[in-house]
Length: 193
Ligand SMILES: Cc1ncc(COP(=O)(O)O)c(C=O)c1O
Image 1 (cartoon, rainbow, N blue to C red):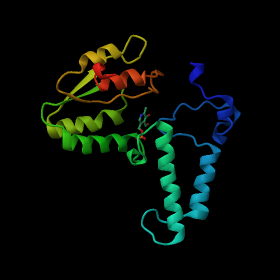
Image 2 (image 1 turned 30 degrees about the vertical axis):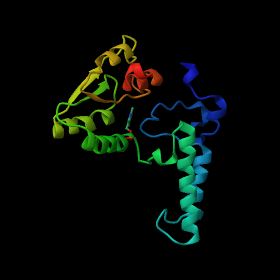
Image 3 (image 1 turned 180 degrees about the vertical axis):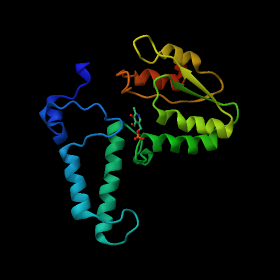
Image 4 (image 1 turned 180 degrees about the horizontal axis):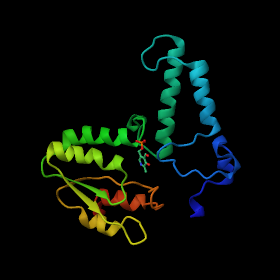
C-alpha cells in the first residue's frame, strides 16, 4: 500500500497537506500543488484574457499558454497528438461526453457496454441513460475476492455485441489499482495485444 502513497518530496508541494494530514477524497476534489495555485493566481490575476476568441496580444498569449498545457498533457500521457486532449470539468462530464458522442454515432439497439462491479456512478449513469435511449445491454464484470477487477472474467465477457469497455483505473472505495494495461488489452481484444 505504501508504494502508492505520495513520496514525502511530493507531499511538500501541496500546502493543504501540511502536518501529515491524510486526504482520501481526491477523486471528488483534488488538492492542488503550489505550482498550480501559483499558475491559477497568475492567470486570473495578471494574464487573464479570452482564449481562442481575441485578436489582441494578451488574448494571443493566453491562448498560447492554454494550448501549451494541451501539448504537455499529451506528452505526459503518451497521446499521439495534442488534439486528442479534450479538457473537461471532471469524470462525469467526460464520460457523458463519450457516451453521447461515441454512443450517439456508433451504437445501436442490441449493442453492449461492459463495466465492472467497482465503478462509480459517473461511469454507470451515462451508460444507463444511453441504454434507455438506444436499447443497449450493460454487462458488469465481477471482482476477485480481494476487491480487484477479475481481468480473466472481464476478457471472457467481451462478446461480439460488446462495443465499449469502460473501467476505472483506481477504486477509492476498495483501494484497488487495476492493471490498466491488461484491461486496456481486454478492451482491444486479447488477440491484438
Ligand atoms: C471515485 C469517483 N469517481 C468519479 C467521481 C466523479 O468525479 P467528477 O466530480 O470529476 O465528475 C467521483 C466524485 O466524487 C468519485 O468519488
